[in-house]
Image 1 (spheres, helix red, strand yellow):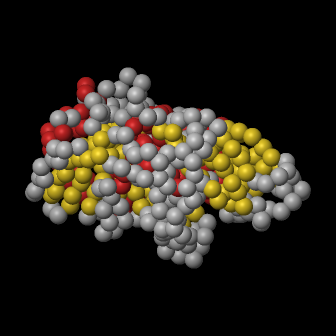
Image 2 (image 1 turned 180 degrees about the horizontal axis):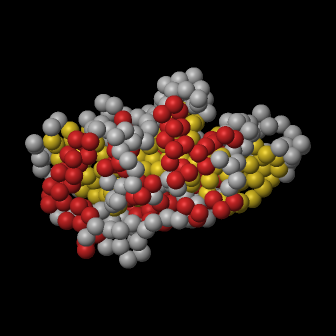
Image 3 (image 1 turned 120 degrees about the horizontal axis):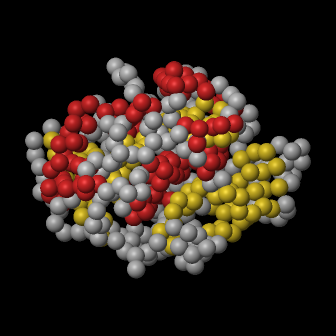
Length: 424
């Protein structure tokens, strides 16, 4: 076992916005987006926060804990796992993860050479004990987790839920499955919100094969028992990264707000996370993804088959899920781009312009813009462009519902805008 001494000097991270993205928007580092003015677009100012990072290595596996330098008490830990052979230790620099730390007073934990196996969970527990000493944050051993990751990282988010459901606020498993092999789920497992996000063609030609073959039976067995779990097959993609944070980060954000006890103090011991009444959430009918508009309803009003449904935290998440899961999306939001929130951050009080391509939805009669489930405005003519003013800190997932001349309603893709509140 090797413990790497903590980095005593704060790491001051400068993020220039907008970040360059590949043309596919599938992963960091592609074609550049257009620059906007600071008044109407993402801030070009550097991240004003400093960070301290601490590393721990055991059996060839390394984890790095990053804490905002001015954070007195670490209330929780955002854990993001990378794909196989990847390294997520520096992912805290990405806006959609970084601002989560500041919104919720969380630390960030990234890993290298971790997998979904149980021994990695044990190494993390050993590491957190040592990192609590190194960082002089003894409360770390009591801090709950918000977990996500892609591929092997999604498998690790699953492992966290399986091994420690009492400490997992929520788990978003991307490009993997909720692996319950050899596990008899307890009430704590069933009561931990989880969402599995796969590609339509992931390890198979359609949603009936491939990854779905192992995901569907789990939901079919446990959703009727009240499991707070859901699933989404992103149309048109396979086992690939497609800025799934547009859905995953609003889920984790909502879960922290719903489950973290108002009087929770990790300095006094492990937290008892607040339970969620399944009837307080929303439910999506997984059989309607190809109907033109995924059907969603408040849990108390849902009339479909629970075995073929997805449980969702609230109405806001349900609207984002609907825009993400509907296969027929003739409207496409083109600006901001789907992955823009990886590197673009907006200052509180600024404005954003939402532009869409309506070439596949000619003759529309009404376009309605939503922020989560909140309708902001609508258009009945003119170019498909909206301006949203006075943005407030947090995650804003925008989507459009369009109505054609026959009364058919179709969604756009969702896009994420992250708004920060500057210190002081």
